Length: 426
Image 1 (cartoon, rainbow, N blue to C red):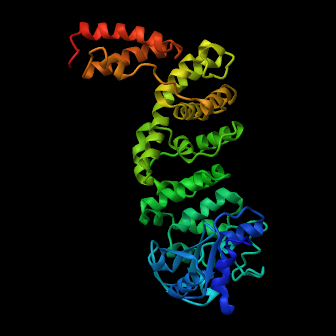
Image 2 (cartoon, rainbow, N blue to C red):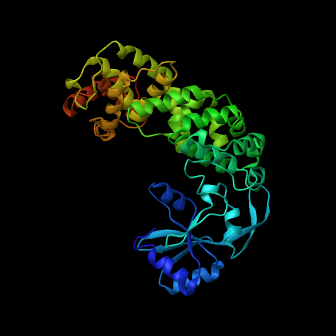
Image 3 (spheres, rainbow, N blue to C red):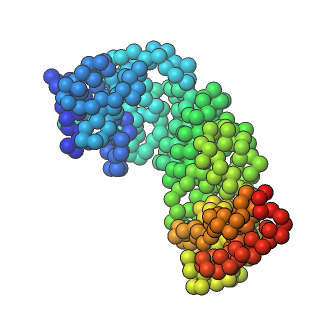
């Protein structure tokens, strides 16, 4: 906020004494002593005038949300969101009709929480219209003005309340604001599923998500997010395992713990509008859990060792783990194993430590023979796939140890087999 990239932006917008300020989360985090990532700027000028000033200063301007008065000013390769001050003319809980204003208090009234309604001039002067400074220490997540009014203006604010609670702790939630969220919970169902999913996944990945999720369950918020059975206790155990095992908070892995059943993955995925990649991973974790449970049982009694890329350096009990990594993906198998552990009343992290380390360093071995090797021996069509599968099964059973020479010898056996079946050209 004081760096060389932002200075030209503030200078261009503030020329002639215009009261340009930093707004929103960057002000909150700066005052809390937290790292600031996105820097947002407010200006009491209509968008066309703000754009003209920026372009006259030689800055690139991207009209990222020009209809609502927002553009991105690019300076020294860094983007800064610049928004003209606004006031709501009409809202329906999902979208708002706005008018531009030069009144900073009117603009602050549009913010959700008091701590987000602060603004800061480059000279360090802080402007607080609704008690946001007092709500920073100790943290208090309090809606600006009447909480019911703020929620009815934008129903997503219910989920934002719990996302902030997942960052600051549910105890930081203003009781009146939380009560309003509970009373207005049904309004979540009017929101687009994309908005719900994005906000919910952010909540799941936050540092204090476990207690926030438990509050969402008791307040009726989870039921409004998706009509399914939720398991906050298993979610809490998964979050605790991630901490013990030094794993980053993963919203999809945590979501798997929250629902626990592959039969509900599709319903939840559609309710949250998960991407295809997220949905596939969620389903894979849930579907693999039963097999992962058996694998953990097999290795629990053994002195677990890291399954390295060199099988000769570790023990036979992890042969099945390497095969699972190969077939299903190391991360999916690791997360399915974590789900199994989180499903226990008192999960044991010790058997998982080496598994986590192994997954982090796993490089999937490459089968030392290819389809071209079969084609060179006169095999074509579906028989190529059958021959490769034959060799691959043998190679996996041998713990990926055989090299190309041994694999080519096995390939001859595969060729004899498919020829014996009369499959050379089919």
